[in-house]
Image 1 (cartoon, rainbow, N blue to C red):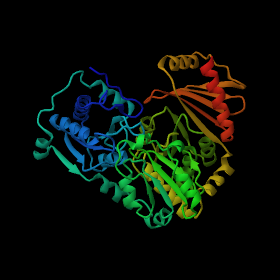
Image 2 (image 1 turned 135 degrees about the vertical axis):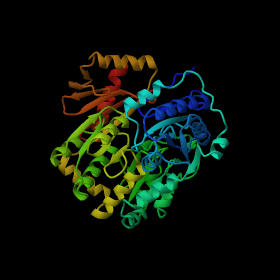
Image 3 (image 1 turned 45 degrees about the vertical axis):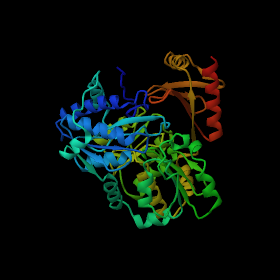
Length: 467
């Protein structure tokens, strides 16, 4: 029987290969057992995004949960991951499940577990659930319609729940003025409906149902978003751009000139807005690959910084148990105080537009103000697809301290929180880490500007592939 493993953010596999109805039912059986043993409400919210087969897999999940004695509230259409997390929190269910492979290519689907507090289940709990996955298929008994008729499964409107939550937490009239100049790329994902509802005057790209995503992975990084920048650059009436990934928990952002603004800069803007404008306090929790500029800004503000392994579940654990201002990843996953402990691309977009409205400043102006405090910087990334043997050889070389330099860049220190971050003699750093969800080796570099960061990436890539 196929062995199911949860990565940094859920279980993901290729549809009809590892991701089958039978395997989904195996995971759902374990989810039910986990909920039943938790001491919490024996109930679960279940949803799905815009990927192929999402509704079918969600119904099979609901059927298996109901068969195991867990009452299910199933979304009445596609929803974002944050909507499921919010629903689990607001409706006080024992857990939440969303069928999604997030930003992975269209051939994938996946299964994410959400806890009752409205965020990812913490690593220890995920490990317990994973250990409960049966080796053989468990029969789910009655049909989905039977469970619907007897009340073990019912439908819920999670989008409206989320919509009303937004109305209660934002200055929507101020945001509406900014949204007239917003270009939003839904990437054919689950954010399309709620953004049309919240920001009806914005310009929408790829806001229709297309589970093939036109062959493009729905990850909101600059190479996957070729349309937004030129649209903004050609028309001065547009002042910003927003993109969200397949399940709308990650953000991509553009300034009024059509320039892509990466997550490192967004994290700094959000810290500045939340602390200075909103008067919030708390710790800043960031993943290992986030810019050092965050530490510099927090030092100026007297905010404690905690660095975690890659994967939002590690950040979430701190947000649930501590007073956290912001929890953030390099990959566009950000959560803030005042919302659930969950990444949310749409929510972050609303916060940034509110910041623009309150400050009456453009994104580029706000970033220049940040540079005056922390200095200029750039973080760049390469994703290198390698066979497993070569990838493992490189990881072993990192582990055994085989690298003393990458071309002309001398290594002066190594940090190993998650992957390997090499501190260089020029004050920059480069990090090597195998992906936990894809057959990829990621290389990150930070320096004073983009050209310098790319030079470090090139030197590192050449060194590790030709050694």
